Length: 421
Image (cartoon, rainbow, N blue to C red):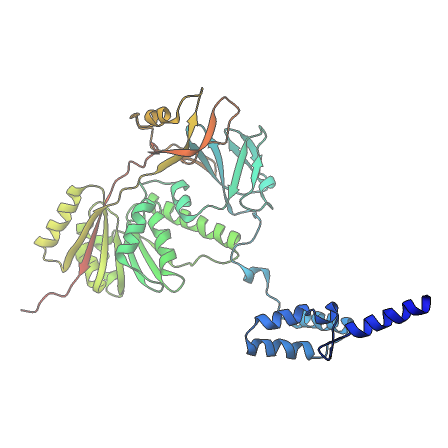
């Protein structure tokens, strides 16, 4: 019986091994390898390249590792300073900006210069500077009283708003409009009359770049020294915090611009920025040095001064054409999740937001040694522990009451060549 069973199995296997005169392949023999599946999905030329790579001889694992180590050793090394302009951690001597969230959707900003033996004082407690030095920007640290401070590097806009000031500065909203007016480029030479606290000077310095030049005239000694100090402090902090130098391209001159006719003879100006009480007295002196088609931007406090300026240009027949007079408005908005309180609808809360309130005080500045505090509008506080609950929708939007009440008129004058008689 065993013999007959073996013969039947052999006959059945021989019969199944051939189908149509061809031997039948088993399932594992007909399946495709992963490489073959990829090759069938690729275009013909790419599939051929994959086949050549698969057919190439491979080095032993030990030799491949040695080759990779050799390539890493021979690759050019990039120093950490060249990899990016901003180092990771705070360093002693640079500026740090701390943000503290407060009530009524406000944020308190504190600007300080880091020193090993100093402390950062805030309404929520103190924070030693040595706890900040070595930390990465963007981290949240706790003060001695448990308040949370968000630490980061200040921007140039925040620095000019927080730096010590004597006269009223040119606000960033006006500075940006004036930079667009004069349309200066890296390498240009710009004249500024009225250094003030140095806000406009810093933005001009960045705009003209290392190859450019800014000539800043100031008639008052205290304003002249303050502008130089603010400019010098920003340059020093920038060099420490960014491992590169801020361009040293500003010449501060303590002199009345109306008496600087002799100085203007040897200067070719690409643009002029006037931020002074009587800009009409400076135009006859500076316009010979301004290139043909160049722009003179004038920063004035009210429209009456604009009228006096244009009247002086007309009576003195100065080669200037008034192209534009603008007033830049700036309004902050608060967009907050609607609140549901005591089960009432969020629509009632939205109606309350639309009720007019008395505007708050514009800004509050507190100078504590080398530390400055500024209060401005920001986002809502984190979720509190009271009975209020916050919804994802709808949102309530309203203008912020912490507005900059400062207003100024910007006048754009372009020099032209008068017709020859």
